[in-house]
Length: 428
Image 1: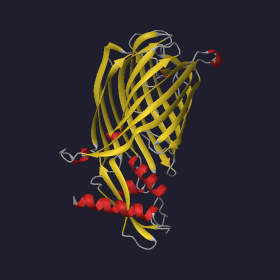
Image 2: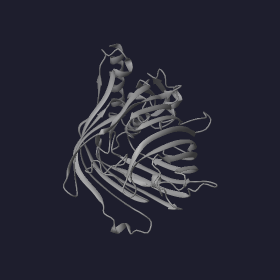
Image 3: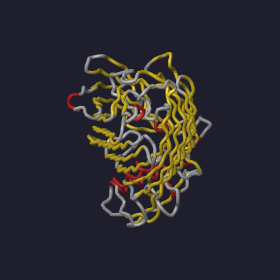
Image 4: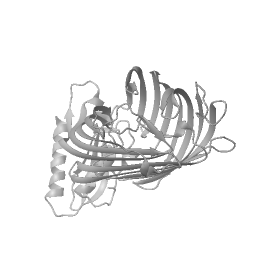
């Protein structure tokens, strides 16, 4: 009760200072509480407001969103205390999430109930309290996979250097319009390093190794005559991100540009991939927005093996086409989505839950309208002559604790076929 009264008084003081006075105030100091595991530097790194900064309501709201985007906290509040004539101390009050998260995996391949897969990803989302992420994934059933990944947004304290390492092996089935349905096996590994230049811009470079084979060998499924391709790869990625909330944006822009080279040295594989992913959100009113996405991918260079084709119907889907898949060497994918809050983001508290990290939970309910479209083609084809997959519809998005977005959507495609979409995570 004492903590609740203190928080209420701080919030009242903050509102009074920011809304009821013309006095310009500046940050004297920043004080952080509630971060039992997360070190202070992880939070301070995301804040625009620092000692000497001018305090504004917009600045506080932006910093709250940036800290929440770390996905380490269920609630973030920035309050003012120890008020002077022109100086105030910022009190950053956070409620931490449980950092070890088991995420069940499961679904149907090609929407076939006879082709089920199931598994688990265990994540340590705050390794050593430094916002480093450690993932281990095991999937069994029709698709089998094992994977490991480690990422660090600040590998060296002295510099904003990024680091990541991944390793995985997968056995699954692909359905190709050209080559039919067949089993495939992957072994992948990679290392990436990068640099964060400021709050919005970062760049990374990486190297990787891939071993690919098909269980049922056929000509052209691989470039090597034995049915197994092995090659090194390199990549460069640029990222610009000003979105308000990365888990479900309603304002801001994300731009990602990529260059990837598959095949170095003596490998039969010699492919270049150029990608751009542009997303922008126009805020219509607080927590409501109209979003646009244009994703393009171009593969060029030598012969492109089928396993490096662009694909839709797997992780990237046009809503309204359940179970449909297509592929090509080049692709354009677009999406438009209107997001209107029926119930704006709010906090529920459950003090009776024995684990403190689950006592504070954030929810919201959105109503949405959407339209998706995509086309794929091969080199030598005129993309204007290729058909477009196009679907539209509407539905409801439930924003839940731990950055989970549940979607119930009703979609129709160009052939007027109807589909119900049940999915986890935002569409973009």
